[in-house]
Length: 211
Image (cartoon, rainbow, N blue to C red; front, side):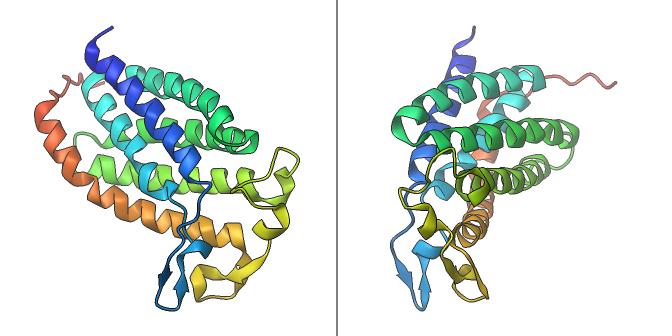
């Protein structure tokens, strides 16, 4: 097993474990009339890095090795999340992670011969949307309350109505948090195109045989 492959697995496990922990903490800040605690958690800033790791692994090693990195990173991250976060966060994260990252592998592989930015941006955008939907749905919706509580708050607080993104009609708190997290994930995904472009110059691409 090459050093780069081990580093890819370690990076994936670290990023997801950190994100599982940070998603429990809303950003306690006020931006004018907008209360960021009602629409954003710290996990939104770290999780998009998982797509960067996945895409670079896919580009260098190929889809099969990328799936191994996702699977191993998933197992390690869920195990650590059980210690650092709640069981419900671990279940929600595991479900969302596997679906989103597997989809990211497929989309990136199909688009990788296009312009350098298309594959990572499109795959991470779709993957982030799926991840956000599944994660917040399982972690905080009342349907899955039997698993655990989330965000370190009572379930009643998670369902408490707040203005959507602090400006729209009232929705459950977790819905506004999901939307806010997704917006930030997209901004971070755009910012990560810079390190992706730099790292793709250091990490050699593999030869693709047309089917």
